[in-house]
Image (cartoon, rainbow over the protein chains, first blue to last red):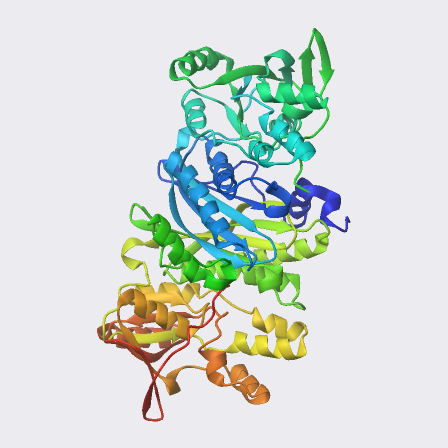
Length: 316
Length: 316
C-alpha cells in the first residue's frame, strides 16, 4: 500500500477509498439530490494559500476566483446556482483588510450570478484555507452528467482555452500582480451550462483539470474514445502569445494544464445544428472540436492521427 | 479599524462584514431554505489540525468528531441530517493510512445517524484542514431557531455538561490518547433535537461555545435575560472528578468552556410538563436548568443571585 498521499494523487486516493469501503464518490461535478421536479445540486471546492493562491494577486480577485470555481461545478451540471456558503480558515495574524477584500470579491461574483450568501464558518488555522459550498437547481430532465455520451456525439467546448495556463507560466517566470491575476481569472459558465442543457447536450464537465484529463475521464466513464480536431480547438490569443514568448508548446497551455473553467460537452449529432444556430443568435460562444469515437483518445492534426497520452493536472 | 484577525475575534469579524456590506450572516446553526413543506438545512463547519485536533487522538476519532460536529448544527435546528460532503485539505506527506482512518470515522458517524456521503473535494495544502457540509430537512412548522423565546420559557439542556472540558484540561496536563479522545468525544443530538421540536421547544442552540456564551447569544438575539439555577445544571461526573483533581472551578469546565454539543433550548411553560413526561418515556435526557427572564444573565446559587459575566469560547 502506498504510504503518503503525495504518492498516489487525488484520484488514486479516491479509488483506494472506494475499494476499501465500497461507497461511490460521485463522478459528477456536483452531487444531485431529487427534490420534486428538480435536482438540487450541491458541490464543494476548497483552495489554500500555498497551493492555489498565487503571490501577487489581490485578495479581491482571490475571493472572486474562489466563488467562481464553486459556481462552475453547478454550471457544469446545467444548473442555476442559487446559494453559497463558505468555511474560511485563517491564521490569527491575517490582516482584517485581506479578509474584507476576499469577502468583497466573493460578493461581487455572487451578485453577478444572482447567488445568495447564506452563511458560513470562520476558524483559525495555520494557513489560509477556503472551502466553498455552492447550491443550485436544475429541472430533472435537464441535468448534465458526465455519463450519457454516445459514439458519434459532437464534442464541443465553450470559450477559448489556455489563458489561465499562460498567466501561470508568465507569473512563474516574472511574478507580479498582472500574471497572478490572469492565472486565476475565471468565470463560471452558468449561462452556457443552462444553454447547452436546454439545447440537448448529452454530457458536460468543466475543464478545471485540463482538456486531456477531461476527455480521459469522460472516456473512462462512458467507455468511449474521442477524436479531437486540433485546428478546431479555440485557443486564447494570450496563450499563443505566451507560447511564442516562452517557447512552451501551445498544447501544454491549452490542452494539458487545466485551471480554467470552460465547459467541455457533447451533443447528439442530430441536435447540434439547432444548438449552433441558437448559440450564434444568443451570443453563446461554443466550438465543435471533435467527436466521441469507439475507443482511444486521438488528435487529428495536419492529416495525421496521433494518440493522446497525458492525464492533465492532478491535485497531489 | 483593527488590523489583525486575532484582535477582533470571529464574532467581531462577522459584525464588521455585516457593517460593511449590510448582508446578514444567519444567527442560526444552519441556513434554512424553503422547499415546499420543509426547510432544507445546510451548514458548514471546519476544523484544522493545529487548532482543533488534539495530539494523541486516533484519526478515526477525529473523523467521527468532524462529522458529528457538522451534524450537530442540523440537530440544533430540529432537523434530520440526510447528506454529508467534505472538502479535505492535506499536506502531501500525510500518511494514506491517516486519511483512510479519518474516512472510517466519518463513515461510522454517518452510518449511526443514517446520513449519506454524497461527495467532496480533496486538495493539497500546508495543514490538515477539513470543512464539512451537512444537509438536512425539517418540517416548516417544526424548525428550531435561536429566536422565538418568550419571558417565562423554561430553559433546558440535553445530556450533561463538562466532559469535553475535563478531557481538555487533563490532556493539556498529561497528554495522551485517552484525554485527547475525551476532549473530542461528542454525539450530535439528532434524536433529542427532533424530540424537543416535536414537543414544542421555542428555540435551540448547540453548546459548542459553552453555556454562558450560548445564553449570552440567545439573550442578545431575543432581547431577554436568563436566570440559571446552579444546582439544576447536570454536570458530568468526569467533570467533577477533574475539577477536584486539578483544582479547576467546575463552572469553568461546565459553563464556560464549550467544545461540547449538547443542545440548550427553551420551551413555553405550558408545554414543559408534557415534554418532560414524554422524555422520561422515550429515554431522552433533558434537564430544566432555569428560565428566560426580563433581562440580564444571572445565576441562582445557595439562595444568592449573582450576575453572569464571561462570554465563553471564541474561535480567534
